[in-house]
Image (cartoon, rainbow over all chains, first blue to last red; front, top):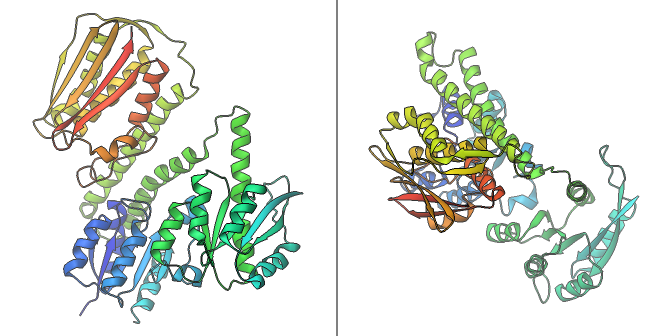
Length: 128
Length: 372
């Protein structure tokens, strides 16, 4: 059975484009346009992986959503996709111990990442 | 060489002397800086001692352990923020939780480093901070020199301009790679969306042009006697196609002539923004009522709509640059987030006032008051 990925982003065009990409990797995709909508879906549905944007309703929506996902589904991998680094100079790294304790995402990726890299990262997290 | 004062607050002497050793011969130097920075370390073993030292000799940077014997690190951070001290705070902690991080970030902590940390981790954090301090000082100097450089404005602007570019680029790549099929029809939606994003980008650029007209902050040189009623009528005409498309009815109640000494271009911008907002955030078959009246030596103009309204918690942000109220009702409405900030600037340049009254779900009323 195909694995299902939940993508959360408030830019509907980014959402559509990433959906097409991920479908081509061979996954089912469901989408949400906000942290709130994402939470609603997660109430009744357990995706195999979540890819979410950092700045949505609020500038830290992505952190909060990933925290909530991990609380409900500790085993579901979460990728935070963000353009923040390029714009603010602030860098987060989910693999650094400093951040690991408070950023509950498994991976933080730049939004401009190439398709093949994204595919590799997703499959790695899904142990495929 | 410039020196930054670094205060290390940690109850473990080993950490304090470690920091001292790491930064002793450490310099931060970027090509864009005219001077390299080095660091002078002072040490505090508790939060209480830290506050004493801060009061005695204000540091530029504080490395703050969260877990301290008495007062906690976040409390020191809070103290710094409450006094509006310009100290850049880095939290050193092995017990960070999301709550702590969010709270500390809220209170202005800039960075987190783990405990124990490697010299490299400390150094790269200091590099980032030095860059920030440098830019902050630079920005202040420019401001002092009267240059209206607005770093924050520019960085948000670049985000707002990049988002549509990324979207359109993404769509073009989809077309290039034939991701949706081999016929042109497969891409109708993609082309539609691209055009929409480009249009909103154009609107942003037009708003920016409006902004540059008033950005000097000086009263306009193009003031003349104008009939405000005419200006409003022409704005209504400009917005009529949009109103018809959205099935919104516009009415105007105004004396035939209200002559004021104003810049006509500025007030076209004001009315175009208010009227197009009143249509944009309206409901189908909604109404826009515009009233212009003269009372007690004042000119009052109100633009009232029957639209989605504004929540009271959003009122304060309404007139700020690039602020768009984000909720389920506004998500699919595009805008630059500049319109109302421009309107407010123009009104204030003309010694007037603008206020807003709103009932969520029922509608909003923008009221401009101008001295006669």
